[in-house]
Image (cartoon, rainbow, N blue to C red):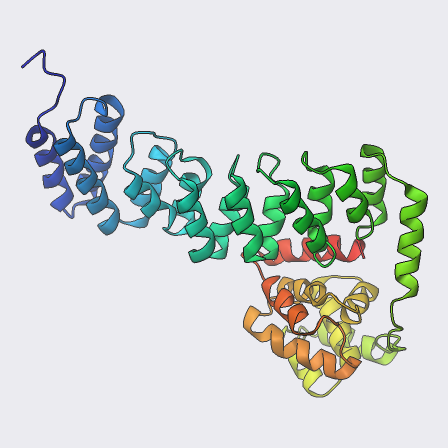
Length: 366
């Protein structure tokens, strides 16, 4: 009847279910378009039975559709308030290219679903959750608990996240060993003067200047604390890095196009640490002294890990490389088992170029 605001469930659902059963790509595209248009225009008019049918069709589409169709669907309904929550959560757990717009914008993803993504989904999904605007304090805590460098860095760079003082304190403490946190934490709107003083002790000179400019801190006392801390650092092995002969050898191999990432493991197997350092610097386009500083750092294996990631070394090979380097350096880079775990975690879901950039930024802050 014309006055009835409810749409008959059979009239709405049956044509859509017919399209859903079809394997023809054109029908799939028609199904996607018609279903979204229907829900956008009549979501308030659907009776419960029709809404359940529509949800069933959506789930059938997603469960059996090609990835590009799922991606278009996710883009189309990422901000929709009418979408079935079960469908939204399903898309949020899909391949990251499909999930990204839903994780970033869907108002139907509640804290419980976001926390499940952090604890159960891939690292790329966790990063997207950490970057989501206005995430709540429980979600922030879950992101910090996962202790993934890429997730923590994304969270620190999220100015709208509800990072409470206890959570900010945990991030500042983590900045002692994760240099990438320094810059975003220094600029974060929820940073306060008390925590900024703690952060001051662990960042480079440029960020210390930024802290001084933003907060009222006792610079003289902080610099004295830094000096006292440095005086307590145990002496490092007296190593001078690669010899001139080792550098010439690596240059010759590179000139003959015979220098490959696999050479790094071979050099370490023969206990030629100088050749390893020279080769890693050459392959990554890094300054030799920066590689040497990463190799003999007393507590941050993630520096060397970023350099290795930038030249194509696999995450699974890094623990072996780290152990062989430590055998040549009396345990450096230090940090023990926890340092080894941080080093492995530094192999994030990013390209070698990004790993190289992260290495240069991190080593500059040491």
